[in-house]
Image (tube, one colour):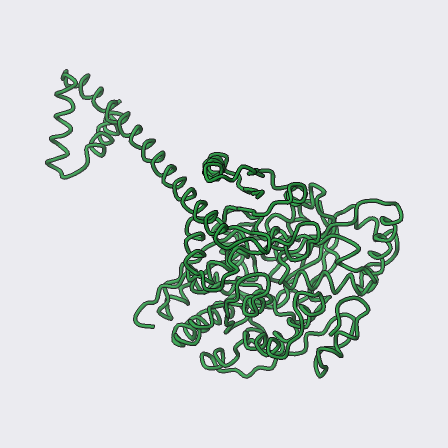
Length: 190
Length: 382
């Protein structure tokens, strides 16, 4: 079975590709260049097309399925009128799938479920990354504030940290907020 | 509806959603007890899906798409109800400067009948020279843009399914594709053809209203079940949007409305372009301006009241282009999408919509589907 992933995010499509390979789908290709989307799809002639919902090429794909004689008339994923749970899960995960007519429902379901979980895994990864980035920023800010206090009040590193922690507890604020105030104040006193 | 209702509404950045934008921005929706969140989308397919599964409570939608969803064409069948029209007309057919030069070299193109015949000659010449067929862009298979382009070229003898390529693209991507030579022309809603003219890559050939007079362009759509189960919500939405439309239509508000719509959270293009669209005075190329006060109709002359005859006419276009087969039950279902009953319950009215007259071809009113379709040389018949 040939699967095409239409996604401009290289990391997300890698995660998805890997998942599909692990599940035994070896013919997986990715399209990231949207300008010749239709030509590329004609050339690959896939059985399943997966596209992320933020991709504006979705309308282009849908129209192609309406008129195309070149592609074996793939149709929208959600052929089963009763399967609203699948539709909701995939829209929430941010992916949509199109398949050729006549594929077995169970096989499609397994592909879609895999897509959904991989897309979710990707957005969790992104959240983690964001969090790690902001953690790092916070640590840097606290280090800078500590340095300012050490120099101004001739404190050891430990004493400077304790001073900020004490202020944070008294004022019921976060230590990062205190550190930011220290930096702002220091800049004003320059 | 109890207390303040949270309403999520999806939209595509287009001037024809002006009544909806203004209803929200100026607080007309809040005055009706609605807490509206507008959500900008990148594709009509996304809007349809999110409306279908309830992530959106309502949506700015292509009128033919509301009919298609209800009939289950191209996707899952999700019955929708459109209790109010958001706009009539508002589209334009633009071509690349190169194609425009080719067309005008063959004679006058001011009238759609003339330009369509010129297009047929260009198409024939390309076929004779074994060059790539022309490619035109439109927004979706179930859109007025698609029907306007097809109707226009078919009158000149061009078969849109055989003689050239039609591809769907989201409106904001048309200009770039025209500039890159991926498209030779397109039919799109405002302001995108004006953006092409200003960028010097395209020429506006015809306004949509030169092809069809009073064509239902966009509706505010809800799931049919919601429309039937929550009449208070529907009425509040209708009243808010009507207030928004009245505000847009007031000449003294033109500058303010253009400014609001130009914001990145709405249409996100220059206020001056939006102003031209709202007044129907469009620059069609580097030098000339064309004016029609029905270029884009928001609330004037009862345009907001949905009329089942408009849905029947849309169904006829679907039949003509082979998007569906005729069945009396389907024809009735199509008509049931546009809901003057809900509109009248909210704001009264009983304004009669005129016929959707085309620049050529048989008239639709008073004819059967079979008779109407038999009046065309190109397209499916019953």
